[in-house]
Image 1 (cartoon, rainbow, N blue to C red):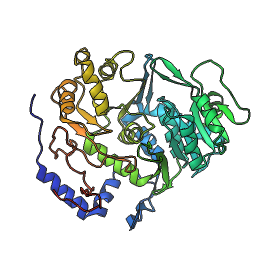
Image 2 (image 1 turned 180 degrees about the vertical axis):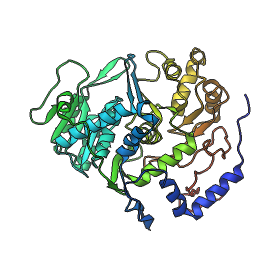
Image 3 (image 1 turned 45 degrees about the vertical axis):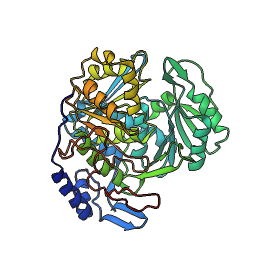
Image 4 (image 1 turned 135 degrees about the horizontal axis):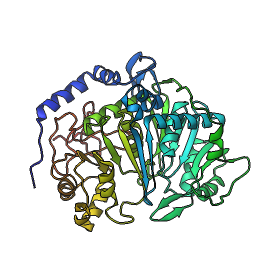
Length: 442
């Protein structure tokens, strides 16, 4: 195996120390790279354990992800490619995405959704999911995405915890050639989640579904009355953008609230550092939007940078184990971000599936979800990256909303080591502690 490229560590450490010692100056400069409707009054207001970022600043996530690109060459480039396991495809330019987001936002307003209210999104991996997220953000409402693989009880628990009144769903999802009856799951959930007053259903087939008169509405009928433009609402930096629940693998799921300004600034900066993302990037994160990785890596961070995002609805090895590599070749993916679990599965299938496709467009590989052991790292580096693509092993959580520890090829400063997430990113002061919370040292 060829040697992995190493970068000088000292320069990175100097940058990290500067970010920690001059925290407000550092993040103020990063925040200035975004467009604000009103400049903030104070970078950080910290009264432990509470912190507020860019206090008094006004911005809008939807505007930053779609509107701003209409004033550059990005307007007519592809913002979103979508494909499902049956081979159906869609593509949206930034202008087309802008138009769809505005019409969805108008529909939400016509339903009576107002600033600060919660909208539950129980949708499969279809374009309407990121469109709904951006539309909700546009009017200052708060989206709550619930993974479409969750049960009716899990959905009901999240609805009851937030007292949401509006829910967006689809009649079905698709996986491994089978249909997942999402509307039926919603109907079961609402038997024990009475706060929901209105349900919007995106129909994907011609089959009949249960419609509760006065509660359920069909998306294709509502959207007929939608306007083509809804002004993005200026929101204070600390206004909630979304609530996302932890998986519940270590106890009862916790609803994590991410505000607008700090979340967007941090993800804009870190995705440049970690992935060297740009408007020329074709970015594919294989996570479901229902997880935090999907929120940041499929919707907000790539669109902030004007990149082209790829969404795939389907299993990783259906109809055959070569489907992912075919997609990379077809769309010319430059940044590929997936989990060690997926890579281990492909290792078992063997590299012959990989060799059938041209993966030369890839520039950076990413790992997320759990630690990646050296054996898997090296297989990924050799067979997927062709021994030329850096692997960014990213560590973060639903609670952080963004990558905390990772190599950063975009800075060209951090060494790559198989199986290691390397060092904290600039501005992150991390320590290893014992069970009592005491630092254990190097």
